[in-house]
Length: 276
Image 1: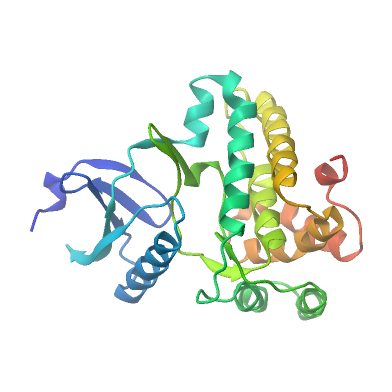
Image 2: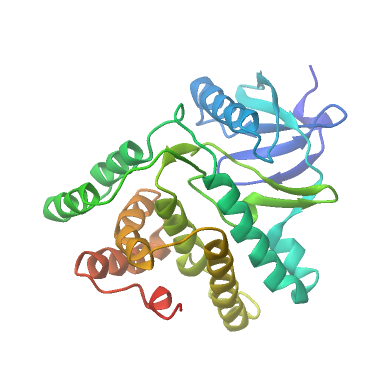
Protein backbone atom coordinates (compact mmCIF):
# COMPACT_ATOMS: atom_id res chain seq x y z
CA UNK A 1 0.00 0.00 0.00
CA UNK A 2 1.17 3.53 -0.73
CA UNK A 3 2.60 5.53 2.19
CA UNK A 4 1.46 9.08 2.96
CA UNK A 5 4.83 10.45 1.86
CA UNK A 6 4.05 9.28 -1.67
CA UNK A 7 0.60 10.86 -1.84
CA UNK A 8 -0.24 14.39 -2.93
CA UNK A 9 -2.21 16.23 -0.28
CA UNK A 10 -5.10 18.22 -1.73
CA UNK A 11 -6.36 19.85 1.45
CA UNK A 12 -7.31 19.44 5.09
CA UNK A 13 -10.06 20.32 7.54
CA UNK A 14 -11.03 19.86 11.16
CA UNK A 15 -11.73 16.15 10.71
CA UNK A 16 -9.44 14.90 7.96
CA UNK A 17 -6.84 15.39 5.26
CA UNK A 18 -7.61 14.68 1.60
CA UNK A 19 -5.05 13.07 -0.72
CA UNK A 20 -4.99 12.16 -4.39
CA UNK A 21 -5.36 8.37 -4.61
CA UNK A 22 -5.66 6.17 -7.68
CA UNK A 23 -6.80 7.71 -10.97
CA UNK A 24 -10.20 9.30 -10.41
CA UNK A 25 -10.24 8.84 -6.62
CA UNK A 26 -9.26 10.63 -3.43
CA UNK A 27 -8.49 9.38 0.07
CA UNK A 28 -10.19 11.20 2.92
CA UNK A 29 -7.93 10.28 5.85
CA UNK A 30 -9.30 11.12 9.28
CA UNK A 31 -7.14 12.52 12.06
CA UNK A 32 -5.91 9.92 14.59
CA UNK A 33 -8.66 10.63 17.16
CA UNK A 34 -11.28 9.24 14.74
CA UNK A 35 -11.97 5.51 14.96
CA UNK A 36 -12.74 2.75 12.50
CA UNK A 37 -16.40 3.07 13.54
CA UNK A 38 -16.35 6.82 12.72
CA UNK A 39 -14.99 6.12 9.23
CA UNK A 40 -17.47 3.30 8.62
CA UNK A 41 -20.39 5.48 9.72
CA UNK A 42 -19.47 8.38 7.45
CA UNK A 43 -18.86 6.00 4.55
CA UNK A 44 -22.26 4.37 5.06
CA UNK A 45 -24.08 7.72 5.26
CA UNK A 46 -22.24 9.11 2.24
CA UNK A 47 -23.08 6.03 0.19
CA UNK A 48 -26.75 6.17 1.21
CA UNK A 49 -26.93 9.79 0.08
CA UNK A 50 -25.27 8.92 -3.25
CA UNK A 51 -27.79 6.10 -3.78
CA UNK A 52 -30.62 8.64 -3.31
CA UNK A 53 -29.41 10.39 -6.46
CA UNK A 54 -27.92 13.39 -4.68
CA UNK A 55 -24.99 14.99 -6.56
CA UNK A 56 -22.23 13.72 -4.28
CA UNK A 57 -19.20 11.42 -4.29
CA UNK A 58 -19.50 7.63 -4.46
CA UNK A 59 -17.63 5.69 -1.74
CA UNK A 60 -15.31 2.93 -2.96
CA UNK A 61 -13.58 1.64 0.17
CA UNK A 62 -12.76 2.13 3.85
CA UNK A 63 -9.15 1.43 4.83
CA UNK A 64 -6.42 2.02 7.41
CA UNK A 65 -3.18 3.83 6.65
CA UNK A 66 -0.37 4.47 9.12
CA UNK A 67 -2.68 4.00 12.08
CA UNK A 68 -5.43 6.26 10.72
CA UNK A 69 -8.75 5.37 9.13
CA UNK A 70 -10.02 6.78 5.89
CA UNK A 71 -12.31 6.26 2.95
CA UNK A 72 -11.68 6.23 -0.78
CA UNK A 73 -14.10 8.40 -2.73
CA UNK A 74 -14.81 9.38 -6.28
CA UNK A 75 -12.68 12.46 -7.08
CA UNK A 76 -14.89 15.43 -7.83
CA UNK A 77 -12.56 17.86 -9.56
CA UNK A 78 -14.12 21.15 -8.61
CA UNK A 79 -13.61 24.20 -6.42
CA UNK A 80 -15.53 25.20 -3.27
CA UNK A 81 -18.31 27.69 -3.88
CA UNK A 82 -16.33 30.27 -1.87
CA UNK A 83 -13.39 30.01 -4.31
CA UNK A 84 -15.79 30.15 -7.25
CA UNK A 85 -17.02 33.53 -5.96
CA UNK A 86 -13.60 34.90 -5.02
CA UNK A 87 -12.18 34.32 -8.51
CA UNK A 88 -15.01 36.44 -9.94
CA UNK A 89 -17.03 38.49 -7.39
CA UNK A 90 -19.71 39.17 -10.03
CA UNK A 91 -20.77 35.53 -9.53
CA UNK A 92 -21.96 36.19 -5.97
CA UNK A 93 -25.67 36.37 -6.75
CA UNK A 94 -25.63 33.39 -9.11
CA UNK A 95 -23.67 31.33 -6.56
CA UNK A 96 -26.18 32.15 -3.82
CA UNK A 97 -29.03 31.14 -6.13
CA UNK A 98 -27.26 27.84 -6.84
CA UNK A 99 -26.90 27.23 -3.12
CA UNK A 100 -30.61 27.84 -2.51
CA UNK A 101 -31.71 25.59 -5.37
CA UNK A 102 -29.29 22.85 -4.31
CA UNK A 103 -30.45 22.93 -0.69
CA UNK A 104 -34.05 22.60 -1.84
CA UNK A 105 -33.03 19.66 -4.04
CA UNK A 106 -31.61 17.86 -0.99
CA UNK A 107 -34.74 18.53 1.04
CA UNK A 108 -36.94 17.04 -1.69
CA UNK A 109 -35.45 13.59 -0.89
CA UNK A 110 -37.09 11.32 1.68
CA UNK A 111 -34.51 9.96 4.13
CA UNK A 112 -36.37 7.50 6.32
CA UNK A 113 -33.33 5.25 6.86
CA UNK A 114 -30.95 7.97 8.07
CA UNK A 115 -30.32 8.93 11.72
CA UNK A 116 -32.82 11.24 13.44
CA UNK A 117 -32.07 14.95 13.41
CA UNK A 118 -34.15 15.44 16.55
CA UNK A 119 -32.24 12.81 18.53
CA UNK A 120 -28.92 14.31 17.46
CA UNK A 121 -30.02 17.78 18.56
CA UNK A 122 -31.24 16.43 21.91
CA UNK A 123 -27.90 14.71 22.54
CA UNK A 124 -25.95 17.85 21.69
CA UNK A 125 -28.08 20.08 23.90
CA UNK A 126 -27.80 17.62 26.80
CA UNK A 127 -24.02 17.53 26.40
CA UNK A 128 -23.29 21.25 25.96
CA UNK A 129 -21.96 23.38 28.80
CA UNK A 130 -25.09 25.28 29.78
CA UNK A 131 -26.91 25.68 33.10
CA UNK A 132 -29.45 22.92 33.69
CA UNK A 133 -32.42 25.27 33.55
CA UNK A 134 -31.33 26.59 30.16
CA UNK A 135 -30.89 23.08 28.77
CA UNK A 136 -34.35 22.15 30.06
CA UNK A 137 -35.82 25.28 28.43
CA UNK A 138 -34.17 24.40 25.12
CA UNK A 139 -35.43 20.81 25.21
CA UNK A 140 -38.95 22.04 26.02
CA UNK A 141 -38.69 24.50 23.13
CA UNK A 142 -37.54 21.71 20.80
CA UNK A 143 -40.58 19.61 21.75
CA UNK A 144 -42.82 22.31 20.27
CA UNK A 145 -41.06 22.25 16.87
CA UNK A 146 -42.22 19.87 14.13
CA UNK A 147 -40.19 16.81 13.14
CA UNK A 148 -39.62 15.74 9.53
CA UNK A 149 -38.33 12.99 7.26
CA UNK A 150 -36.47 15.00 4.62
CA UNK A 151 -32.79 14.54 3.79
CA UNK A 152 -30.78 17.11 5.80
CA UNK A 153 -27.05 17.67 5.41
CA UNK A 154 -26.42 19.00 8.89
CA UNK A 155 -23.52 21.25 7.82
CA UNK A 156 -24.60 22.80 4.52
CA UNK A 157 -22.48 25.83 3.65
CA UNK A 158 -20.46 27.10 0.65
CA UNK A 159 -17.25 25.23 1.58
CA UNK A 160 -19.16 21.94 1.34
CA UNK A 161 -20.37 22.64 -2.19
CA UNK A 162 -18.02 22.01 -5.11
CA UNK A 163 -18.46 23.58 -8.54
CA UNK A 164 -17.05 21.41 -11.34
CA UNK A 165 -17.22 21.49 -15.12
CA UNK A 166 -20.10 19.00 -15.11
CA UNK A 167 -22.19 20.34 -12.24
CA UNK A 168 -22.45 21.20 -8.57
CA UNK A 169 -21.78 18.59 -5.85
CA UNK A 170 -22.29 18.39 -2.10
CA UNK A 171 -19.50 16.88 0.03
CA UNK A 172 -18.86 15.95 3.68
CA UNK A 173 -21.85 13.94 4.90
CA UNK A 174 -21.02 12.77 8.46
CA UNK A 175 -24.09 14.65 9.72
CA UNK A 176 -26.54 13.29 7.12
CA UNK A 177 -29.91 12.74 8.77
CA UNK A 178 -33.67 12.72 8.34
CA UNK A 179 -35.45 15.71 9.78
CA UNK A 180 -37.08 19.08 9.36
CA UNK A 181 -35.65 21.10 6.42
CA UNK A 182 -36.16 24.37 8.34
CA UNK A 183 -33.77 23.16 11.05
CA UNK A 184 -31.21 22.43 8.31
CA UNK A 185 -31.70 25.95 6.91
CA UNK A 186 -31.26 27.35 10.43
CA UNK A 187 -27.89 25.59 10.66
CA UNK A 188 -26.88 27.13 7.31
CA UNK A 189 -28.08 30.53 8.56
CA UNK A 190 -25.90 30.15 11.62
CA UNK A 191 -22.82 29.23 9.58
CA UNK A 192 -23.23 31.83 6.84
CA UNK A 193 -24.28 34.80 9.00
CA UNK A 194 -22.87 34.20 12.46
CA UNK A 195 -19.72 32.06 12.23
CA UNK A 196 -16.57 33.86 13.34
CA UNK A 197 -14.32 35.65 10.85
CA UNK A 198 -10.70 36.32 11.88
CA UNK A 199 -10.39 39.94 13.13
CA UNK A 200 -7.30 40.54 10.96
CA UNK A 201 -8.87 39.14 7.79
CA UNK A 202 -8.21 41.53 4.86
CA UNK A 203 -11.43 43.18 3.71
CA UNK A 204 -13.33 41.86 6.74
CA UNK A 205 -16.04 44.55 6.62
CA UNK A 206 -16.65 44.01 2.91
CA UNK A 207 -16.87 40.25 3.43
CA UNK A 208 -19.41 40.82 6.22
CA UNK A 209 -21.53 42.89 3.85
CA UNK A 210 -21.17 40.32 1.07
CA UNK A 211 -22.18 37.41 3.23
CA UNK A 212 -25.35 39.21 4.30
CA UNK A 213 -26.19 39.84 0.66
CA UNK A 214 -25.26 36.26 -0.22
CA UNK A 215 -27.50 34.89 2.53
CA UNK A 216 -30.50 36.99 1.53
CA UNK A 217 -30.22 35.80 -2.08
CA UNK A 218 -29.80 32.16 -0.99
CA UNK A 219 -32.92 32.34 1.20
CA UNK A 220 -34.99 34.16 -1.44
CA UNK A 221 -34.08 31.55 -4.04
CA UNK A 222 -34.90 28.68 -1.69
CA UNK A 223 -38.33 30.24 -1.24
CA UNK A 224 -38.96 30.25 -4.98
CA UNK A 225 -38.93 26.45 -4.80
CA UNK A 226 -40.69 25.97 -1.47
CA UNK A 227 -42.68 28.03 0.98
CA UNK A 228 -40.55 28.84 3.99
CA UNK A 229 -42.07 30.06 7.27
CA UNK A 230 -39.64 32.63 8.65
CA UNK A 231 -41.23 32.39 12.10
CA UNK A 232 -40.31 28.69 12.11
CA UNK A 233 -36.78 29.55 10.99
CA UNK A 234 -36.47 31.98 13.88
CA UNK A 235 -37.81 29.32 16.26
CA UNK A 236 -35.07 26.89 15.27
CA UNK A 237 -32.21 29.38 15.80
CA UNK A 238 -31.72 28.86 19.59
CA UNK A 239 -31.74 25.08 19.05
CA UNK A 240 -29.06 25.06 16.36
CA UNK A 241 -27.05 27.66 18.30
CA UNK A 242 -27.02 25.36 21.35
CA UNK A 243 -25.95 22.42 19.18
CA UNK A 244 -23.13 24.58 17.76
CA UNK A 245 -21.96 25.33 21.32
CA UNK A 246 -21.14 21.63 21.64
CA UNK A 247 -18.43 22.14 18.98
CA UNK A 248 -16.41 24.24 21.47
CA UNK A 249 -15.42 27.24 19.34
CA UNK A 250 -14.56 29.87 22.01
CA UNK A 251 -14.67 32.87 19.67
CA UNK A 252 -18.32 32.16 18.81
CA UNK A 253 -19.66 31.43 22.30
CA UNK A 254 -20.93 34.91 23.23
CA UNK A 255 -22.76 35.24 19.90
CA UNK A 256 -24.27 31.78 20.29
CA UNK A 257 -25.43 32.57 23.82
CA UNK A 258 -27.18 35.70 22.55
CA UNK A 259 -28.97 33.68 19.88
CA UNK A 260 -30.04 31.12 22.50
CA UNK A 261 -31.27 33.62 25.08
CA UNK A 262 -32.95 35.97 22.61
CA UNK A 263 -34.48 33.09 20.69
CA UNK A 264 -36.03 31.55 23.79
CA UNK A 265 -37.35 35.00 24.73
CA UNK A 266 -38.98 35.36 21.31
CA UNK A 267 -36.62 38.06 20.00
CA UNK A 268 -35.78 37.54 16.31
CA UNK A 269 -32.20 36.99 15.20
CA UNK A 270 -31.14 40.46 13.93
CA UNK A 271 -30.24 39.71 10.33
CA UNK A 272 -33.14 37.36 9.64
CA UNK A 273 -35.75 39.84 10.80
CA UNK A 274 -34.69 42.25 8.03
CA UNK A 275 -35.45 39.63 5.40
CA UNK A 276 -38.57 40.32 3.33
